[in-house]
Length: 343
Image (cartoon, rainbow, N blue to C red):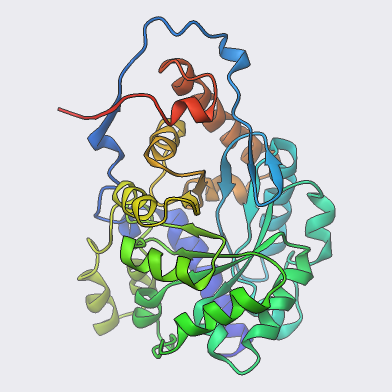
């Protein structure tokens, strides 16, 4: 696939995800199965509820990660500028989209030193696909991904199902686990591994933890289904093949429980179908340290910095009120409040 084809594919992804419905996972993320026990006497000052947390050496004002988004050259620079400026204003984390195109063709698309200048204080995560590690220069590409944006850590995303559906996708995944282990041993920055919307099982999470990863993002089912996204780009057989995977994946809530049990001490990020701050509160209660959102942020991301700030300010308000209404003065207390199965 040449650079122009890759750029068109990234533009298609943005348009398809913005269009919504047809590519939403048919799997429920699992948060509606759970309810907090309301505390009618919280004995708290709402404005004093503390949402700060420290992650990978950075202090965040709220436990939110703007998860990886991308776009072709026509949009990526503006999107990345909006996201970086918003993350800086909000004091939250930002994970960029795949840097493969920017590294291969030298066109940053907003993924250069300017990104860190816009957001000097945030937790900033670089991003590469796991299949890129299989190339002979995979380790060097990973190092360049971190250096080109001044990132605090590198995310390696796992997307085997998406690649299997995608025309010209990477089909041979033999040796990926060994390359991740080598990267963890050789890269100066921490390595984070995430799925792209079908979830990490407890067993896979344990394999990755044993490789030395610093954090995992479960990216469970319940949000955008990237098999369906690739199906929308195709015709005939590829679209029909993709349709069979509409209900594929592990619900996000289940992923968080499984991965926390398998990796009790590892930094854990919950993403996939997070709709609002109450979902975020449930994810944190189940064991997540940070909560990510991508597709739910996309409309704001293509609009303006102010739109992204407003979007996450609303989520922060919702999370703060959820803490208040459960009697939790901070995130540590939130992780101890009652959470029960819905009737």
